[in-house]
Amino acid sequence: FRLPGETSEDGASDAIDPAQILSAWTNADIKDLLARGIFDEATYGRVRFHHRSVQEFLAAERLLAMVKDGFPRDSIDLLIFRERSNRMVIPQHLVAMAAWCAPEDKAIRQRILAIAPEYLIDEGDPSRLSVEDRRAILRSYEKRFADRHRVFHRFDPFGMRRFACPELAETIGELLSSPTEPEHLKVVLLDVAEEGKISEVCDAAVAIAVEPATSSSLRAVALHVISEIGES
Image (cartoon, rainbow, N blue to C red; front, side, top):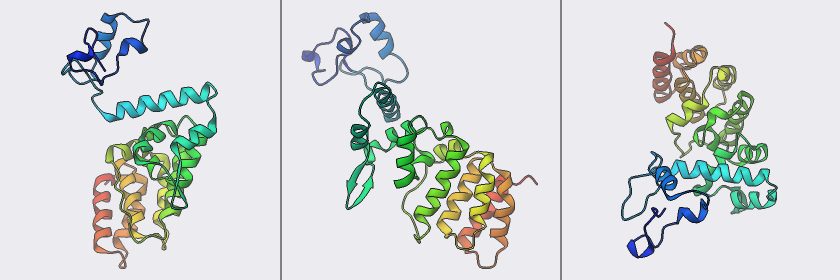
């Protein structure tokens, strides 16, 4: 964004002039806004958002406002969801924005749940999802990856912490107790329990740790989680 008083000749030719958007604001008000912590310090007459997550959140808020104003749902779907190699995907640069929209927009949430539930576990703000939605996300994630021997995505622990809550204990315990559940899914479920300090999952973790058939790597994860969430 170009600072008030700067011109394209001052090195900010590719920057947006906020006065064209905030036409009712004074230059002093715009300067005050651009000095807030969500922006980096000014360089060469320009400022930018301090972190990409701010852009993603604001883009989601704008998209939700457009939906409420009657913007065609088909156009929203075409923007977020794309067909690649005969399957629906969300372009990587739109994942976080879509996840920010999910708690407020049921249609977007349901489509993400169907094609990529993993994004709802740690992207956007999972704490805004209802407990029922979080349970559905775990079950959808389990269904999507149950036939895989391994997966290649990694969850952000801070996002997972916002997703986790004590009300998920029963669902996590049930999935952990399944003898057919692959190891990589059990690791994810144990991680959720650890991040959410869900002590009710401790019994299921103990059962995994003492099971002779458990691999050494999964046993190590289970023992670590027990040490972190065990009450005694």
